[in-house]
Length: 110
Image (cartoon, rainbow, N blue to C red; front, side, top):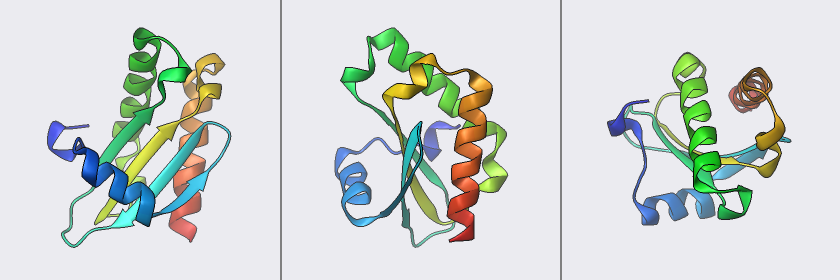
């Protein structure tokens, strides 16, 4: 995931969470909101209660890798906020990948 595809601004982050629609499963909650231009933007959020910094950073790296491998599944002109749940700590990369891909496919159907 490139830096220009990331959402860092807190106001934008909160706006997407408050006004966008959401989909969830055991490992992730994804908030989506339509944008005016044809870009895709991503934000990743992990609560401090999930674990120490090195655990949260490891989970973020895994989620970024999954996003990079499956970018063709995301709809254009949408913002995505991916919230990682605490259940992700004990899971493997393939479980996370399958879970996120199935959630993205659920979003594409609706």
